[in-house]
Length: 243
Image (cartoon, rainbow, N blue to C red; front, top):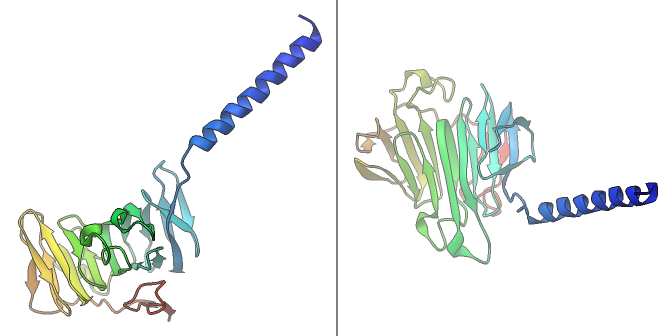
């Protein structure tokens, strides 16, 4: 084999491998953005599905499969394409189990957020208000919360809420929820409870049915650097104001 022939074969192999790599890249589905960090006070980190960890900043994208964690004295507000938003409280961890929204396909709507610890304030958007009412859910350690409303607060204090809210270390362990507008359904294998506007719900553990509390047990839920409306982050009624 001559030098020219050898060089031709090397170049042919190089371009062929490049074409295959390009073909594989085209076959790989793009990771769809689930949401974006709209406002941030403090430190927010993300663990991607591949295990990599990075620090996020304002306007960073978040995706289905991401696990987000706030540090001490840190708050993060996330905005989603359907007009919903949520604020993560300090010392909180939340996984975006699934998110799918297409303006033209309401039947495919899906939003499932798993609160692993700490607190979330949620303002719903179009998901759960059109098509399937069960399309928007929040999972916790001891119960699942179905959405029939517009805004509410959820705390998973199963392992304690020290640093999540003021005097959080004094709260009995369990999951708490309060509704500001509409209604939410707190449920587990032991039972279910509708939490209406101005009501407070509590679940001690997964073997205990959710119950209504006589009033605010001292959650101090208004200690937020962000003021959220009730219409969603992108609706024009729920714009965020930074204190």
